[in-house]
Image (cartoon, rainbow, N blue to C red; front, side):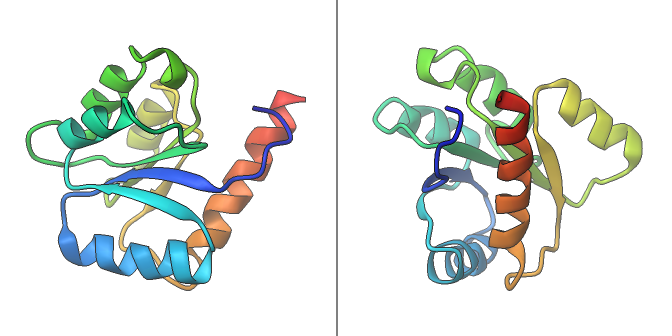
Length: 133
């Protein structure tokens, strides 16, 4: 995975309006190819058919929240160590620490700025690549 370009993202977000804004931010502005899921269960199902470079997970979702989704994805061989970023309004230091202990590279706070979301993800990705070398 080192020195790999970030192109494909698997993104689970239950709020349709946030998915629409993220679509503009990630695809139109960022140039990424994104597979969208409306909840964690759908993300785990779609994960069987795709091989993204990065997982982007909302923390609070119905059916299967972000942390539970991450645990389920980690059981799929390709996803066992795939980089993940959580997105949430819950950004207290202890919460962020908990998400990082689960294996998240970082946490992006919601609401996010659509104009800078792709750049924020790229900065996290670049830090990740530096740790892989």
